[in-house]
Image (cartoon, rainbow, N blue to C red; front, top):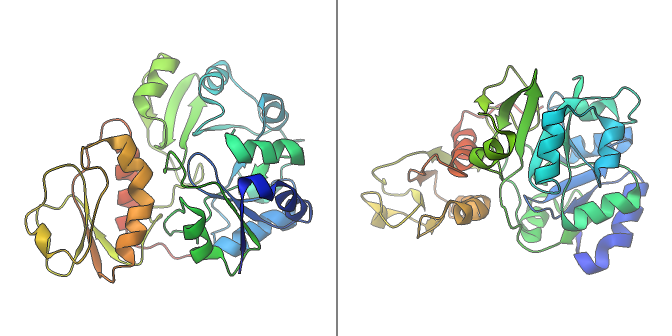
Length: 320
Protein backbone atom coordinates (compact mmCIF):
# COMPACT_ATOMS: atom_id res chain seq x y z
CA UNK A 1 0.00 0.00 0.00
CA UNK A 2 1.22 3.52 -0.81
CA UNK A 3 2.84 5.57 1.93
CA UNK A 4 1.13 8.93 2.53
CA UNK A 5 3.47 11.77 3.47
CA UNK A 6 2.68 15.45 4.06
CA UNK A 7 4.17 17.95 1.62
CA UNK A 8 6.69 19.14 4.21
CA UNK A 9 8.14 15.63 4.55
CA UNK A 10 7.83 14.21 1.04
CA UNK A 11 10.14 16.14 -1.30
CA UNK A 12 13.30 14.03 -1.05
CA UNK A 13 11.47 10.71 -1.24
CA UNK A 14 9.40 11.93 -4.19
CA UNK A 15 12.56 13.04 -5.99
CA UNK A 16 14.23 9.67 -5.40
CA UNK A 17 11.25 7.80 -6.85
CA UNK A 18 11.08 10.09 -9.89
CA UNK A 19 14.82 9.83 -10.52
CA UNK A 20 14.42 6.06 -10.45
CA UNK A 21 11.75 6.12 -13.16
CA UNK A 22 8.81 5.56 -10.82
CA UNK A 23 5.64 7.61 -10.33
CA UNK A 24 4.35 9.68 -7.42
CA UNK A 25 0.88 11.05 -6.67
CA UNK A 26 1.17 14.76 -5.91
CA UNK A 27 -1.22 17.59 -4.99
CA UNK A 28 -1.78 20.47 -7.39
CA UNK A 29 -4.22 23.36 -7.27
CA UNK A 30 -6.59 21.50 -9.64
CA UNK A 31 -6.69 17.79 -8.68
CA UNK A 32 -4.04 15.29 -7.54
CA UNK A 33 -1.68 14.26 -10.34
CA UNK A 34 0.11 10.99 -11.07
CA UNK A 35 3.56 12.34 -11.86
CA UNK A 36 6.45 10.81 -13.74
CA UNK A 37 9.54 12.18 -15.52
CA UNK A 38 8.25 13.30 -18.94
CA UNK A 39 11.64 12.60 -20.54
CA UNK A 40 11.81 8.99 -19.30
CA UNK A 41 9.92 6.46 -21.38
CA UNK A 42 9.85 3.91 -18.56
CA UNK A 43 8.28 6.46 -16.20
CA UNK A 44 5.68 7.55 -18.75
CA UNK A 45 4.80 3.94 -19.51
CA UNK A 46 4.40 3.41 -15.77
CA UNK A 47 1.80 6.22 -15.68
CA UNK A 48 -0.21 4.45 -18.37
CA UNK A 49 0.17 1.13 -16.56
CA UNK A 50 -1.02 2.49 -13.20
CA UNK A 51 -3.99 4.36 -14.70
CA UNK A 52 -4.93 1.77 -17.33
CA UNK A 53 -5.00 4.72 -19.74
CA UNK A 54 -5.48 4.39 -23.54
CA UNK A 55 -2.19 5.06 -25.28
CA UNK A 56 -3.81 7.42 -27.81
CA UNK A 57 -4.73 9.86 -25.03
CA UNK A 58 -1.89 12.41 -24.58
CA UNK A 59 -0.58 13.72 -21.25
CA UNK A 60 0.03 17.23 -19.94
CA UNK A 61 3.69 18.09 -19.35
CA UNK A 62 4.15 20.27 -16.25
CA UNK A 63 6.96 22.81 -16.08
CA UNK A 64 8.60 24.86 -13.35
CA UNK A 65 8.99 28.13 -15.28
CA UNK A 66 8.79 29.77 -18.71
CA UNK A 67 12.41 28.95 -19.48
CA UNK A 68 11.63 25.23 -19.19
CA UNK A 69 8.46 25.70 -21.25
CA UNK A 70 10.39 27.52 -23.99
CA UNK A 71 12.74 24.55 -24.34
CA UNK A 72 9.76 22.30 -25.02
CA UNK A 73 7.38 24.34 -27.19
CA UNK A 74 7.00 27.46 -29.34
CA UNK A 75 4.88 30.32 -27.96
CA UNK A 76 2.90 32.60 -30.26
CA UNK A 77 2.17 36.11 -28.90
CA UNK A 78 -1.35 35.25 -27.65
CA UNK A 79 -0.23 32.07 -25.90
CA UNK A 80 2.61 34.01 -24.27
CA UNK A 81 0.12 36.63 -23.07
CA UNK A 82 -2.11 33.97 -21.54
CA UNK A 83 0.84 32.26 -19.86
CA UNK A 84 1.91 35.59 -18.38
CA UNK A 85 -1.58 36.16 -16.99
CA UNK A 86 -2.46 32.68 -15.70
CA UNK A 87 0.78 30.80 -14.95
CA UNK A 88 1.34 29.31 -12.47
CA UNK A 89 -2.26 28.16 -12.31
CA UNK A 90 -4.99 25.95 -13.78
CA UNK A 91 -4.35 26.74 -17.46
CA UNK A 92 -2.97 24.29 -20.02
CA UNK A 93 -1.77 25.56 -23.40
CA UNK A 94 -1.50 23.28 -26.45
CA UNK A 95 1.53 24.48 -28.39
CA UNK A 96 3.76 23.38 -31.30
CA UNK A 97 6.23 20.83 -29.92
CA UNK A 98 9.96 21.39 -30.35
CA UNK A 99 11.58 18.34 -31.92
CA UNK A 100 14.62 18.46 -29.62
CA UNK A 101 12.67 18.95 -26.37
CA UNK A 102 13.63 15.60 -24.87
CA UNK A 103 9.97 14.83 -24.09
CA UNK A 104 9.24 11.14 -24.60
CA UNK A 105 6.88 10.45 -27.55
CA UNK A 106 4.39 8.64 -25.30
CA UNK A 107 3.57 12.00 -23.69
CA UNK A 108 2.33 13.55 -26.95
CA UNK A 109 0.67 10.35 -28.26
CA UNK A 110 2.05 11.00 -31.74
CA UNK A 111 0.78 14.59 -32.02
CA UNK A 112 3.01 17.44 -33.23
CA UNK A 113 1.73 19.57 -30.36
CA UNK A 114 2.25 19.33 -26.62
CA UNK A 115 0.03 20.37 -23.70
CA UNK A 116 1.93 22.45 -21.11
CA UNK A 117 0.98 23.70 -17.66
CA UNK A 118 2.85 25.40 -14.80
CA UNK A 119 1.48 24.25 -11.41
CA UNK A 120 1.63 26.10 -8.12
CA UNK A 121 2.98 24.85 -4.81
CA UNK A 122 4.53 21.43 -4.26
CA UNK A 123 4.32 20.41 -7.91
CA UNK A 124 6.29 23.44 -9.05
CA UNK A 125 8.91 22.92 -6.33
CA UNK A 126 9.29 19.27 -7.26
CA UNK A 127 9.77 20.02 -10.97
CA UNK A 128 12.33 22.73 -10.22
CA UNK A 129 14.35 20.32 -8.06
CA UNK A 130 14.10 17.53 -10.62
CA UNK A 131 15.13 19.90 -13.41
CA UNK A 132 12.88 18.16 -15.92
CA UNK A 133 9.16 18.41 -16.76
CA UNK A 134 6.69 16.01 -15.21
CA UNK A 135 3.93 14.25 -17.08
CA UNK A 136 1.06 14.26 -14.60
CA UNK A 137 -2.48 13.27 -15.55
CA UNK A 138 -5.07 13.08 -12.77
CA UNK A 139 -4.22 10.48 -10.11
CA UNK A 140 -7.09 8.06 -10.68
CA UNK A 141 -7.89 4.94 -12.66
CA UNK A 142 -8.48 5.97 -16.26
CA UNK A 143 -11.98 7.24 -16.90
CA UNK A 144 -12.90 7.34 -13.22
CA UNK A 145 -13.46 10.22 -10.81
CA UNK A 146 -10.42 12.45 -10.27
CA UNK A 147 -8.94 12.49 -6.76
CA UNK A 148 -9.06 15.77 -4.84
CA UNK A 149 -7.67 14.39 -1.55
CA UNK A 150 -4.76 12.12 -0.71
CA UNK A 151 -7.17 9.62 0.83
CA UNK A 152 -9.21 9.35 -2.37
CA UNK A 153 -6.03 8.74 -4.39
CA UNK A 154 -4.77 6.10 -1.96
CA UNK A 155 -8.14 4.32 -2.03
CA UNK A 156 -8.01 4.11 -5.83
CA UNK A 157 -4.31 3.67 -6.67
CA UNK A 158 -2.71 2.81 -3.32
CA UNK A 159 -1.96 -0.80 -4.22
CA UNK A 160 -0.22 0.29 -7.46
CA UNK A 161 2.06 3.13 -6.35
CA UNK A 162 4.54 3.73 -3.52
CA UNK A 163 3.92 7.34 -2.46
CA UNK A 164 1.02 9.78 -2.19
CA UNK A 165 2.02 13.32 -1.18
CA UNK A 166 -0.68 14.83 1.01
CA UNK A 167 -1.33 18.50 0.41
CA UNK A 168 -4.89 18.49 1.72
CA UNK A 169 -7.98 19.01 -0.40
CA UNK A 170 -7.19 20.68 -3.73
CA UNK A 171 -8.50 24.27 -3.85
CA UNK A 172 -9.85 24.33 -7.43
CA UNK A 173 -11.19 20.78 -7.58
CA UNK A 174 -11.44 20.64 -11.40
CA UNK A 175 -8.77 19.89 -13.97
CA UNK A 176 -7.15 22.73 -15.87
CA UNK A 177 -8.71 24.66 -18.71
CA UNK A 178 -7.10 23.60 -22.02
CA UNK A 179 -6.64 26.17 -24.80
CA UNK A 180 -5.12 26.12 -28.27
CA UNK A 181 -4.19 29.12 -30.41
CA UNK A 182 -4.41 28.63 -34.18
CA UNK A 183 -3.80 31.43 -36.68
CA UNK A 184 -4.23 33.98 -33.93
CA UNK A 185 -7.60 32.58 -32.85
CA UNK A 186 -8.29 30.94 -29.50
CA UNK A 187 -10.06 27.59 -29.14
CA UNK A 188 -11.31 25.97 -25.94
CA UNK A 189 -10.51 22.25 -25.98
CA UNK A 190 -11.57 21.52 -22.40
CA UNK A 191 -13.28 23.84 -19.92
CA UNK A 192 -11.69 23.80 -16.49
CA UNK A 193 -10.48 25.78 -13.50
CA UNK A 194 -10.41 29.15 -15.29
CA UNK A 195 -13.70 30.38 -16.71
CA UNK A 196 -14.10 31.39 -20.35
CA UNK A 197 -14.93 34.97 -19.36
CA UNK A 198 -11.62 35.41 -17.51
CA UNK A 199 -9.72 34.11 -20.53
CA UNK A 200 -11.59 36.30 -23.01
CA UNK A 201 -10.94 39.37 -20.86
CA UNK A 202 -7.18 38.78 -21.05
CA UNK A 203 -7.12 37.65 -24.69
CA UNK A 204 -9.37 40.45 -25.92
CA UNK A 205 -11.17 37.94 -28.12
CA UNK A 206 -13.96 35.38 -27.96
CA UNK A 207 -13.26 31.69 -27.51
CA UNK A 208 -14.37 29.20 -30.10
CA UNK A 209 -15.20 25.65 -29.05
CA UNK A 210 -14.96 22.18 -30.51
CA UNK A 211 -12.24 19.71 -31.43
CA UNK A 212 -11.49 17.13 -34.10
CA UNK A 213 -10.64 13.85 -32.40
CA UNK A 214 -8.23 13.69 -29.45
CA UNK A 215 -6.28 16.95 -29.54
CA UNK A 216 -5.44 17.17 -25.84
CA UNK A 217 -5.77 15.27 -22.56
CA UNK A 218 -9.18 14.66 -21.01
CA UNK A 219 -11.17 14.60 -24.25
CA UNK A 220 -12.59 11.06 -24.19
CA UNK A 221 -16.39 11.10 -24.40
CA UNK A 222 -16.61 8.97 -21.25
CA UNK A 223 -14.38 10.22 -18.45
CA UNK A 224 -14.48 11.12 -14.73
CA UNK A 225 -17.09 8.36 -14.33
CA UNK A 226 -18.34 6.73 -11.12
CA UNK A 227 -19.42 3.11 -11.01
CA UNK A 228 -23.07 4.23 -10.76
CA UNK A 229 -24.97 5.51 -13.78
CA UNK A 230 -25.52 9.27 -13.97
CA UNK A 231 -28.81 11.02 -14.82
CA UNK A 232 -28.38 14.74 -15.48
CA UNK A 233 -30.59 17.84 -15.17
CA UNK A 234 -33.23 15.98 -13.22
CA UNK A 235 -36.55 17.44 -12.14
CA UNK A 236 -37.63 14.30 -10.28
CA UNK A 237 -35.67 11.87 -8.12
CA UNK A 238 -36.66 8.20 -8.30
CA UNK A 239 -36.69 5.93 -5.27
CA UNK A 240 -33.30 4.33 -4.75
CA UNK A 241 -31.33 7.04 -6.53
CA UNK A 242 -28.66 9.17 -4.90
CA UNK A 243 -28.93 12.93 -5.47
CA UNK A 244 -26.18 15.37 -6.39
CA UNK A 245 -27.88 18.69 -5.67
CA UNK A 246 -27.07 22.33 -6.43
CA UNK A 247 -28.44 25.46 -4.82
CA UNK A 248 -31.40 25.93 -2.51
CA UNK A 249 -34.25 24.38 -4.53
CA UNK A 250 -34.64 20.59 -4.58
CA UNK A 251 -35.87 18.33 -7.36
CA UNK A 252 -39.23 16.72 -6.72
CA UNK A 253 -38.92 13.50 -4.73
CA UNK A 254 -35.56 14.44 -3.24
CA UNK A 255 -36.63 12.96 0.10
CA UNK A 256 -36.54 9.49 -1.52
CA UNK A 257 -32.79 9.76 -2.30
CA UNK A 258 -30.67 7.12 -0.56
CA UNK A 259 -27.90 9.71 -0.19
CA UNK A 260 -27.59 13.43 -0.89
CA UNK A 261 -24.72 15.86 -1.37
CA UNK A 262 -25.20 19.52 -2.30
CA UNK A 263 -22.39 20.99 -4.41
CA UNK A 264 -23.19 24.45 -3.05
CA UNK A 265 -26.27 25.30 -1.01
CA UNK A 266 -25.84 28.98 -1.88
CA UNK A 267 -25.32 28.32 -5.60
CA UNK A 268 -21.61 29.28 -5.65
CA UNK A 269 -20.03 27.72 -8.75
CA UNK A 270 -16.48 27.91 -7.37
CA UNK A 271 -17.57 26.00 -4.26
CA UNK A 272 -19.44 23.54 -6.49
CA UNK A 273 -16.34 22.93 -8.60
CA UNK A 274 -14.19 22.24 -5.55
CA UNK A 275 -16.74 19.73 -4.22
CA UNK A 276 -17.66 17.98 -7.48
CA UNK A 277 -15.39 14.93 -7.55
CA UNK A 278 -15.41 14.29 -3.81
CA UNK A 279 -19.21 14.38 -3.71
CA UNK A 280 -19.53 12.13 -6.75
CA UNK A 281 -17.26 9.63 -5.01
CA UNK A 282 -19.30 9.83 -1.80
CA UNK A 283 -22.57 9.18 -3.65
CA UNK A 284 -20.98 6.36 -5.62
CA UNK A 285 -20.10 4.69 -2.31
CA UNK A 286 -23.75 4.92 -1.18
CA UNK A 287 -24.61 1.81 -3.18
CA UNK A 288 -27.09 3.61 -5.44
CA UNK A 289 -27.31 2.24 -8.96
CA UNK A 290 -27.96 5.73 -10.33
CA UNK A 291 -26.89 9.23 -9.27
CA UNK A 292 -29.45 11.89 -10.17
CA UNK A 293 -27.95 15.35 -10.76
CA UNK A 294 -29.82 18.63 -10.44
CA UNK A 295 -29.19 21.31 -13.12
CA UNK A 296 -26.07 23.44 -12.77
CA UNK A 297 -25.91 26.80 -14.63
CA UNK A 298 -23.53 26.92 -17.60
CA UNK A 299 -21.99 30.33 -16.91
CA UNK A 300 -18.43 30.70 -15.60
CA UNK A 301 -17.10 27.53 -13.98
CA UNK A 302 -20.51 25.96 -14.61
CA UNK A 303 -19.34 25.18 -18.14
CA UNK A 304 -16.52 23.02 -16.78
CA UNK A 305 -18.76 21.39 -14.18
CA UNK A 306 -21.32 20.46 -16.84
CA UNK A 307 -18.55 19.15 -19.09
CA UNK A 308 -17.36 16.78 -16.35
CA UNK A 309 -20.91 15.68 -15.56
CA UNK A 310 -21.65 14.98 -19.23
CA UNK A 311 -18.51 12.86 -19.56
CA UNK A 312 -19.33 11.02 -16.33
CA UNK A 313 -22.80 10.22 -17.71
CA UNK A 314 -21.67 9.22 -21.22
CA UNK A 315 -21.65 5.57 -22.39
CA UNK A 316 -18.40 4.05 -21.10
CA UNK A 317 -15.56 3.98 -23.61
CA UNK A 318 -13.61 0.74 -23.79
CA UNK A 319 -10.43 1.16 -21.76
CA UNK A 320 -7.34 -0.36 -23.34
